[in-house]
Amino acid sequence: MLFAQKNMFHLFWLLLAFSFLLKMFVSNRRTKMKKFANEHLINNIVEGFDERRLVFKNVLFIFIYIFSIITLARPQWGFEWREVKRKGTDILLVIDVSKSMLTQDVKPNRLERTKLAVKDLIKKLKGDRIGTIAFAGDAFLVCPLTSDYGGFMLSLNDLDINSVPRGGTNLSVAIDEALKNHTDEKEKDKAIIVITDGDNLEGDPMEAAKRANAVGVKIYTVGIGTEEGELIQVKNERGALEFLKDKKGNFVKSRLNDKLLSQISLETGGVYVKSSGSEFGIDFIYDRYLESREKKELENKQEKLYYQRFQYPLLIALILLIYQTVLSYKKEFA
Image 1 (cartoon, one colour):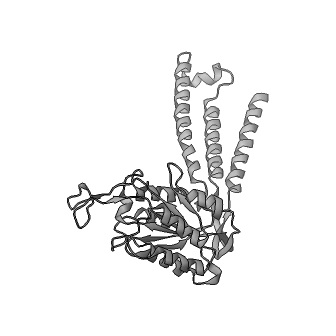
Image 2 (tube, rainbow, N blue to C red; image 1 turned 90 degrees about the vertical axis):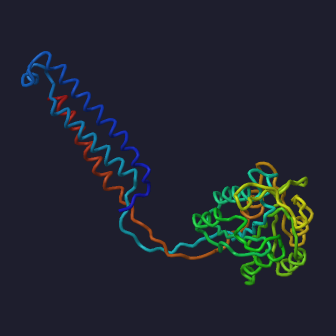
Image 3 (cartoon, rainbow, N blue to C red; image 1 turned 180 degrees about the vertical axis):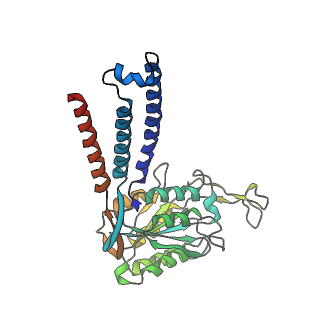
């Protein structure tokens, strides 16, 4: 047996509290009655007092309450298989995990802020599939397109600067890796969103953007960081934070490259958004350009459709309630 609304069982705490108060009430009433007469004479002396009837009525109320909670919890058993058609948009996130994403000009740092923004985006998705490519000096598909948002979140939480072994920043290979998912003519309506500071160190991202444009793929870019930039903080072998240095011993400062990212989006017919404050940019792209798209049929799945059985505990609760009402009327007109 399954329950669709398990949180309703928390209402049993109120039942426990009621049972405790009921026990105290009956005990206190019995003590007061004993001051006037022996217990076996109380029923004869006090008109209308029947302790057993009182206890029975309250026990009846408890059972009504229990079956009402079970009804609200929506018990289910038995099922049938049903074909479910899912519609949505495919969203492929291309996330920079190079050391420059550790820069703290965005709090807590660029990479962690990106992960928080993606988690906010997940809350908006309804039927859309989402996947992730991580890139630095190389690029890898770390989470294929999926509608399993829980599984996606697990891969997102594991994302860090060690997700890609080769250091550096190569936007070109990142775009090419994303294009591998667009070889099918029917799949061109996928959305590629690149999230980076644009601090490209190798490759030619504009040539990669031209290849994307040639096959009709739009690239949306989100720039994270500030134009002033900051020094990059990394952990040394002892786990202590220190500023990153280049091969010549100079401190490395990372800045947002607005120009490159806007050129990539312009080349492919996409949109560039600069992350700022509470508005990261992913939400804007999704709300303005992706959600309004005509949703395509992504997949047909066989899903279990469980039968609702709440009517049985509801019927029992109603019968007990009617019985309790009849008892009250019988006592009133006896």
